Image 1 (cartoon, rainbow, N blue to C red):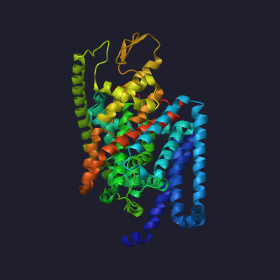
Image 2 (image 1 turned 30 degrees about the vertical axis):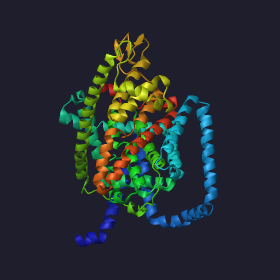
Image 3 (image 1 turned 135 degrees about the vertical axis):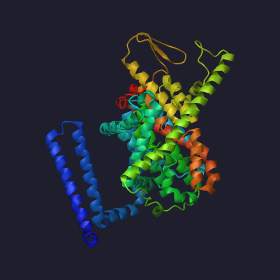
Image 4 (image 1 turned 90 degrees about the horizontal axis):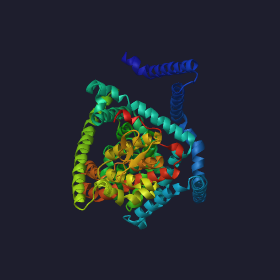
Length: 566
């Protein structure tokens, strides 16, 4: 038997794969004849099948004819581009710049002129990072310009094209559907009333479920392929090193402490600028498991997914602007060309390992929420007590709280992002909570405002407001605590809060990277605060881009029905 398998094993495997493939497409064809593309599910089945078929043929053609295609088609193009590089570069830059200017005039200045304030915000943030750069004279503008261009192009796809918006709206709905399967496990463990304890029993199971899913995708090799392809694009266009590109791509899917594991053997030899880029990538993005949590909070899924992808090139751009490279990198492309395979032996083990890996993450999230909310309550009570001593009390004056202080101090940051003037204080509060507490609390507060806004849109009766911004609906006898915001302000807030850049995360990143590269702890500690600031700017740049390209059709209509959980 062993000799037979050794001799014919490959043929047998190919035959089995062929039979399974034919059986699957027979099923797809029959399904099309039954439902005749009359509903979304059948259309989804067709598109996913065609996508799988396309990927299969790409890999087959690449494996058999890749070298021939490269030599016949790619080599002449590369040689031509190399010979005329300067001319082509100038023509390309002029064409892109002209296209952007024309677009901004026709689609923004003439259609939604108020959105241009967000463009001013982008210019201001870039200018500030340049002025306070570690070495402004050494800034290489290629990664900065290309990073912002990639961010803008992706935002353009999602926010300005109907098919791009619908595609991400559809993707957001599918992600929400997938996350809801975590309820089945939660019901079994906690009972039918699990949603009564929303955060612990509704949100945290989603983190565990998504972590298990990511682990399975790693075992199957899907994550490695996707991350390396995205990293390759950023490396070729932005001119960043292989290691920092892989880390930035990994941050789209995994967290700020997990992504550096992809390049762990290289961290010891990284330059200070590369370490800074790794840290900014972690601060400026969120993990896939956490993204799933925000979706459960009721935050628009399509905008969260878009923000996660936009943040990757922007993080590299802002990092290279704020801490430019002044050393020669020791990282080579071959060092990260192959990522380590999953250590698990099968899918079941991978699923179990992913769930187990989520335990410290869940514990860390819950512990931080308890600690920071408790501390915030203490700080607010203390500030309110102090405010009462000097007459700051209702109903004539707002109570003195941490959020109230942030609403004034951070007001300019919200304003230059393009937030409506009436909403700037509310958004400034959210930014303050996100930066000094964490994004979980900020998104929880944003979800309350989203729910309030949905109620407000349908209300036609009399209402009153107080100095805190709360709105009392007389006919419903309901108080909208926290007030309401315009849809555009909600979208901008969604992008502005989408990142791990907060004071608490500094310790997390320092601990994780310090454990991977013990003799670089001093460098990591020196860069941490600067990286956190740059990470916040990444989120603000995303928010500015969203505000610049916003149209009413991109309003927050891709949210989960959060009223079921609150």
